[in-house]
Image (cartoon, rainbow, N blue to C red; front, side, top):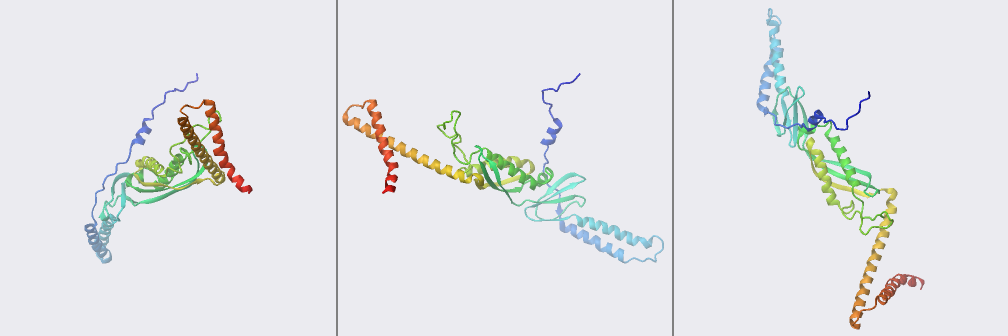
Length: 324
C-alpha cells in the first residue's frame, strides 16, 4: 500500500532552536601585561643560564639536571609571554578554547590573557561597501542601473566572527540583494500605464515614491532593511545612500524621448485647462451683464469656438511665422 504525504507541515524543532540561538558576547578576563612581561623575563633569564652553564662532568643526574630545569623554566616563560596581546583603538580579540567561545576583549592597550586561548582580532572601525551599479528591472519593468554606498561597522565581534563564515562577504551579498529588492518595488519615475480598456487611468499607478525623486526616503528604507538583516550577525549599518541611478544604456535614448513627450503633453494639458478657465470666467461675466443664463446649446457652441480660437491660434502662430 502506497503511503500518502500529510498536508500538515512538520515543525522543525531542531532547526528552529539552531536558528534562534545567538552567541551572547561577554567580556574576557584580562590583566595588565606589564606584570606578566616581568614574570616572563624573570623566568627566561635563569632558564637561559641553566641551559648554557651546565657541567657535563657532574656524576649521575647532575649532568642533565641543569638543562632540564632550564628547559622547564623556558617553556613556562614562553607560555607567559604568549599570553601578551596588544589592542589598538576600535579593535577587539575573540578568544576560543577547545572550540568553545570564552570571551571578547575590546579595551585598547597592552593586556595578558590565558595563553592557551586561540585568538582572532576583529576590526571595529567603519568600513565602506560599494554595491553596484546593478542592472535591475524597476516596478514597471524598465531596466535601470542602480548603485549604493553602505557604511558599516562590527558592533559585536563574536557574532560577526562566529555566526557567519565571512562577515565581509555576508555584508556584500546582503547589500546587493537588498538593493535589488528595493529597486524592483518602485518605478524609476512617475508613469501612467493603460488599464484593461487600453485607456490611461485618471491617476498614475505609482503616484508616490519613485527611484528618481525619493532618494532620502529610499535611503531610509535601505538602511532599515539592511539593519534588520545585519543585526543577527553583530553588524551595525551606519549609513546607506543611493550613489548611482540611471536607465540602462539600451533604453536610455527611448526613455529620454518619452520624458520629453510627457513634458509636452503636460504643457498642453496646462494650456487647455487654463483656456477653459478663461472661457468659463468670460461666459460667467457675460451672463451677469445679460442678467440671464445662456442656453446650454449656445454656451457649448461658444466654448467650442473660443477653444479653437485660443488653442488653434497658439499652435498656428509658429507655422505662420515660419512661412514668412
